Every structure is written in structure tokens, then in C-alpha cells.
Amino acid sequence: MIYSNVCKNINTPLIKDDVRTLRCGEKILLSGVIYTARDAAHARLADSIGKGEALPFELENAIVYYVGPTPATPERVIDSAGPTTSGRMDAYTPLLIASGLTGMIGKGLRSQDVKEAMIKYGAVYLGAIGGAGALLARCVESSEVIAYEDLGAEAIRKLVVKNMPLTVIINSTGEDLYKFGRMQYLSSIS
Image (cartoon, helix red, strand yellow):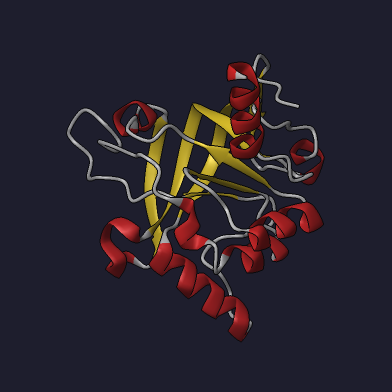
């Protein structure tokens, strides 16, 4: 079932009790600390976990935003911060979820392995609107590179966000908006 008319204010850290209350299709406004990471950063994080090395941020109850923000202009913290395709991180995501990650923000489909890890460990996949990077950047109150500066736009950043508009795409029970939304649409045109 899709709960598209509900809007919740969610603050980080995103604890598992909060994760379990989120429903597929629900709209949220996210505030607090999140971290940016894309493909190259995910590979390094997975490598560090495999070697038992310390990570640049605590994964437990954290949210990762799949974004490579553009440089700031004088009047903004970040000029644009639109989501990238989440499937590119799927090879690494189950390990990060097993290590404590509770939230991911991006766009696009997720693999079955990611969905199974979300169900097993309690995590949620949140969708940000692709093409609305300038709007999403307005929600960013501060940005600080904390790791892998050599990766440029793909470095890991600590962002503080306020009222970032997101939609629950896949919840911790595996309900998937892409699946249910399609079914709902097809039934409406029958």
C-alpha cells in the first residue's frame, strides 16, 4: 500500500525504530547530518570495512546521499546537489547496510541484494527528485569534505540539511514504490 498523503519530519541520526515507521510512498522532510558518497567512495569504504580499518564517519544510523555536489557560489553552500543513479552503488551497499547504514538517498531502481539487506538489517531507500539539484541544494546548511578529497566532487562530505524533501521509495519491509506505483498506474488505466 502506498501512503502518499502523509508527510513526516525526520531528524538524523536515523535509528532503526524510526526506519521501521516509514512507509512506501510517504513524503518526508529530512533534517540533520547526512554524508555524500558515490561509486569511488563506496569502493574505498567497502575496502576499509574488509580490512577492518576505521571509516571516515560512523555508519551506525547514518544516511548516505548519492550525490556529487557542484562547487559553491558566493551566495550558497553548494550550487547544485541532485541525486545520482543509485544502482551504481549496489555492489557495495549490502555491506554498508550490514555495517549499520540505515538510510540511502538517490534515484532509480535497487537490486534484489540491496532490498534483502534492507529487510534483514532495517534500512530505507529515499528518493530525491532528479533534475531538482538547485532546489535540493537550498536545503544544505553546511558542507565539509571529511574524506577522499582526491576524488573531487565524489569526495565524502558531511552535510547538514534542513527540511530536505524526499519520498520513501523502498521501506524496511521491502515495499517498493517503483513496483507498487506501476501496479497502481496500470490498474487505473484498465
